[in-house]
Image (cartoon, rainbow over all chains, first blue to last red; front, side):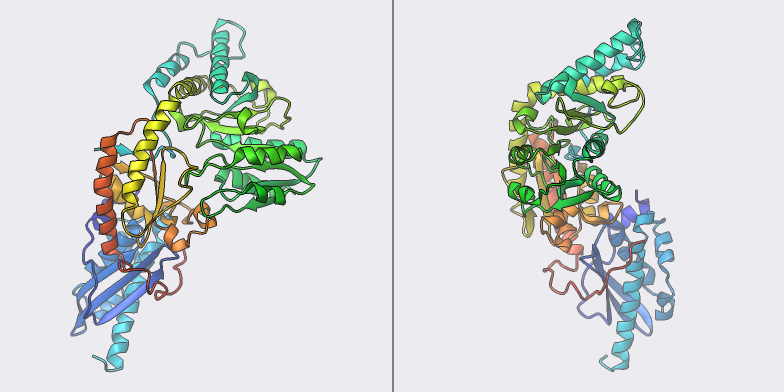
Length: 126
Length: 398
């Protein structure tokens, strides 16, 4: 049911774990819904230097999380912000129709993480 | 190593069953209604299978109606009795433990002007006979309670419920798809009026099921047409599948006592070791359960991930989690037993069969704890459910 890319990112997820010194953290979803993603980013000179994730969810949710952390590394915040859920899904070789909502998880967690970073910047806690 | 632990989904066809079926695909291809020898041979094969199936559940031959599946038998039972008895009343009682083929039939009947009561189970998945008694009204004509749950393994107190139904002249049906062929089932001892069964649940072929209909019980057909199955189920008989179901029933009857004991031992070993893992909950009743059934909820991770990682190791199991279902809904059975939704997502179900070995159990017990550990490392809840609400609302699932 899943593409080779999904299975690869699910079985060998990249960038797993917590990031205690993250510059921005975004949490999306809720375990009651069946999926929740926590995305951590490290930002330097407006560029995402590093990304990590923790995800509770199905194979697709974990693969989406892994893929999005790979996609945003090295990107400027503006470039990362522009990544759509369709781009994540297509980078994974597509998702089954009933799993398309999982691609929102990644894109939404990413936006929240960037917002969180920008808020921290604005309030001068950096 | 390949380990098939999903016998509740289906079971492998026994070679003896296939051998019994083979002649009826080509050489003995006759229609059982034809009066020349080719037809007579097919008719005799169907009748002999009927006898074998009847013997498995201690019924009379005439009380067995062959169907295409367990789902058809369930649909037939609910609609057939509801319509046959609607002049006496239009209320039916079912439970939250039922299969979709019962629940969706009950919902259909509601649309047709019937009313239905859906009884909740207790935390073990048991239906209380007293609750059945209290749900009965003057209008009640039919009660349907599952014999054993494929999701949590719990075996229901059908005999007690049958006594209550009989006292009030209410027809009682039981969906015994998960139990017939896997535990001894005796319709006379249970006291039911109707019982559904499915061949592929006990090493028979897919596409064959049966409805036991107690002698004297009236029913309206689901499929109208010819005079097959005594005019109660039209359509040219699926002779080879019916023959296979008969042979599988015969084998089950002969092997059941020993098989139940072997499977139970393997299952108990599996349960004992899996329950040593932290934050794993056993689901269903500890004693009143199917001998090959071991079901759990593993906290902090989701069922589909476990299924995929186990499958990568050659271990095939099931889950009642939302993400493994096409409808993306958690098992209504688990939720009705009071298991919180976030815990129900971690559902995993092992169902053992006659073909499983001790080596397979050992192998699964080596791999499964590592898989749980790995998925918990990925989970934001590795240290507990703590801040589970911080992500906000659910993403709409279109």
